[in-house]
Length: 85
Image (tube, rainbow, N blue to C red; front, side, top):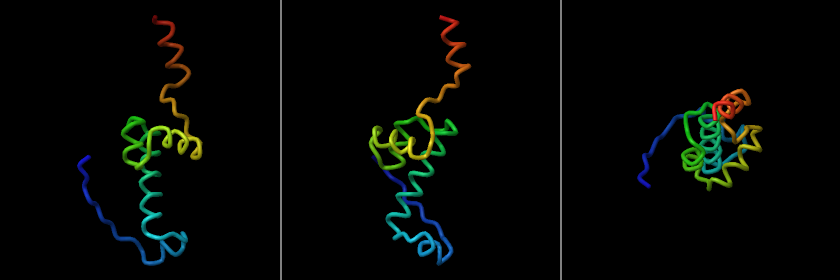
């Protein structure tokens, strides 16, 4: 997998306020972004898991921790699709 390095500036006290070291902070930010982008239907489960640095199974568990459903269809969409078959 080819990667891109992105850097960002944060206020000096952020890591101490969160009681995190830089590596844990980066991992948490990647996961949070991946979960949000998945929730917004901007990324598939597989691609979101890749962004988060997790396996797909681990990403599904993370979705549960965030209270996000792994299903991207609404009940209405499922009913509509079932009725069209």
